[in-house]
Length: 167
Image (cartoon, rainbow, N blue to C red; front, side, top):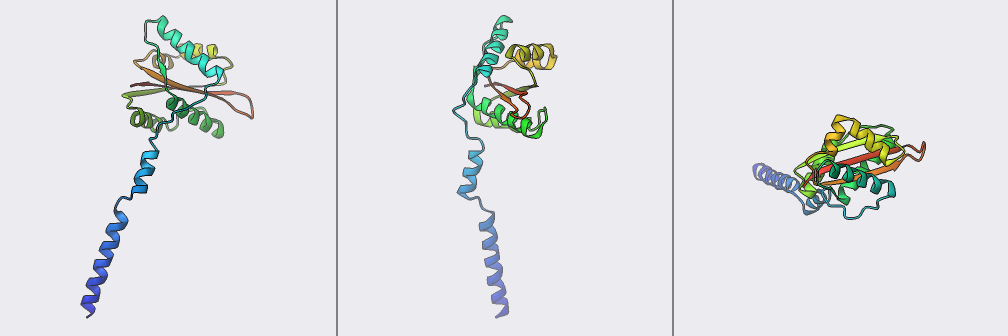
């Protein structure tokens, strides 16, 4: 009798364990939501001017114009908000942003420029072009880009994140 009860309990344990480890459709929806493409983004005039200046520079050196993608600008904005909230200027979590853009948009390569405390689009572009790594991104083999420029409400300083991708 005890052996029969033990076998039944063992069988129930195995069944419960298998059910708890199986994937659930709501878990799959959560994973899919993490790569959901952001369709709309409201550009401010400084962002649009900076994008125009980047494209004008690319054309002036014989390169293609880049198309803006709202999803990439949204990811840029997320990073600006992170930098403002944490009072830092860095590329933290670039791997996650890059992976998201690759999965969501099918990008083959992704790069990023950041900047801090420039007052005009021309000033930030000049600084990026004076830096070999940033210039390489601006003049890189890319087809699309996104940008966000956000002001810290506490001190009024601007944070820039510019993402480039080849799609």
